[in-house]
Image (cartoon, rainbow, N blue to C red; front, side, top):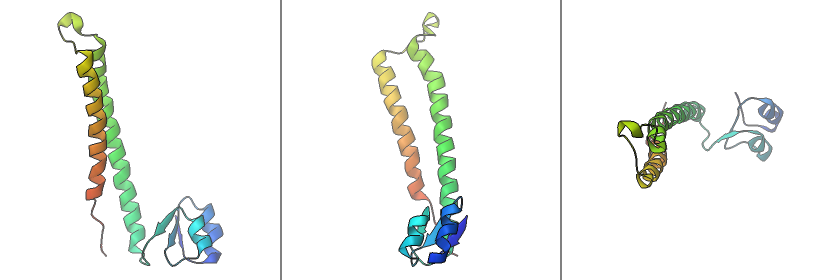
Amino acid sequence: MFVGDGVNDSPVLAQADIGVAVSAASDVTVNAAQIVCMKDRLDDVLNAILISKATLLRIKINFGWAFVYNLILVPIAMGVFQPLGLQLDPMWAGFAMAMSSVSVVLSSLFLRCYKYTNL
C-alpha cells in the first residue's frame, strides 16, 4: 500500500498493490490510485483498511451461510430424502431459494452499521 498526494507519487501509486490518494491530490494522482480518501486525514487510510477487512469477513459469512443453506435444502428439494418422507414442494423450494438470496443481501447491509474510527 502506498499513500500519496502529489504528481510525483502517481507512478508509485499505479505500481502499488493498493494506491491511496488524499482528496487534495492532483487529478493525475487521483486517477492512479485505487482508493481516494475524501478528507485530508491519514486516519481515513486506517478506516479503509478496517472497512475492507469487515467487508471480507461479511463475504466469508455470506458464502458459508449460502453453502450450508444450499447443502441442506437442495437435496431435500431434489427429492433425495423422499423415501424417508422428507420432501419439499417445488413452490416452497423456489421460495426458500429466494429467501436465501434475501438473507445474503440483508446480511450484506450490516456493513452500513460499521463504525469508523476517530483517532
